[in-house]
Length: 159
Image (tube, rainbow, N blue to C red; front, side):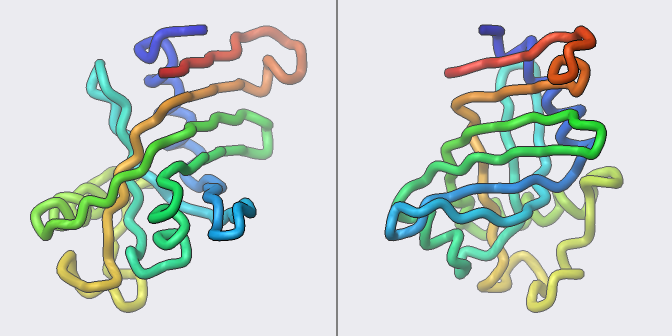
């Protein structure tokens, strides 16, 4: 097992390079449900935090109301993969939503985008716009070279 400081920078680099991930929640019947999402990750040297611009009116939001856990996995065709198992928290107040909107609007490409491109999201006060904070409880980074037996190191951290 590694420290978060050993894993987080490599995780953020890989996640931001791949951009899109498959995110899993558990529905009301305890069945897994997945969707493709586009988080932004921040590593401040001590804490790894993820952010998702998403609707608090979605089925995903209902799943998270019952079970606030989400697992996110990134994969690219060369077989680099990374996963973050997270606790989720909605950033509900307008100030947090404005910060979240700006975080996505001002982030560099390819992770940054203008949230208003999503139909129905006119500004941060729009009812269907929300910011979901991700607090990882476990992180795993596996370069393709590890899977193929060509060297490298599997990085794992657990809270």
